Image 1 (cartoon, rainbow, N blue to C red):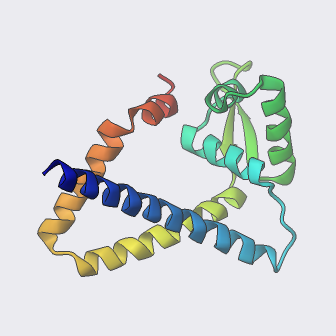
Image 2: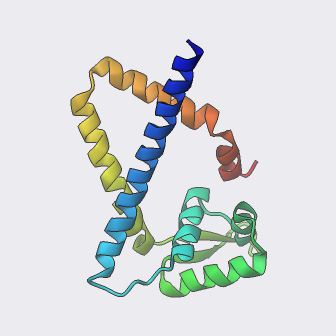
Length: 160
C-alpha cells in the first residue's frame, strides 16, 4: 500500500507541476506574441515587480522590497522605471503625506487580463466536464490549498 501512495504522490506532483507550467507557458507565449506587433516595454523583472505590487494590493516600496528580499534602493529604481513606463503609479496617502502607496495602472491590468482569460477558459471547460458534486469538491480542495496550505505566501501578502 505504501508503494501505491508513493506512486500516487508522484503522479500528483507531476500533474500539479504540469498544470502550473501550462498556465505559465500560456501567459508567456501570449505576452510574447503581442510583442511581435509592438515594442516590448516591460522586462521580465519589471513584470515580476508589477505582479507583486498588484498581489500585495497598494504596498509601499519597502513592502515590495521586503517581499522580494531586495534592497530598497534597487526596488526604488525598478519602480521608478515602471512609473515612467506607465504600468505603476505612486499614490500619496491622504492620512499621512509621507506615506506613498503603489498601484498598478490599467496598462498593466491588460497583462493580468491575459492570465484571467486563460484561467476563465480552463474553468469554463472544467464546469462543462465535471459534475456539480465534483465541481463543489474541486472548489473545496482549491480553497483548502489556498487558505490553509499556502500560508507562507498568504501571510507575506497580508504583511504578517
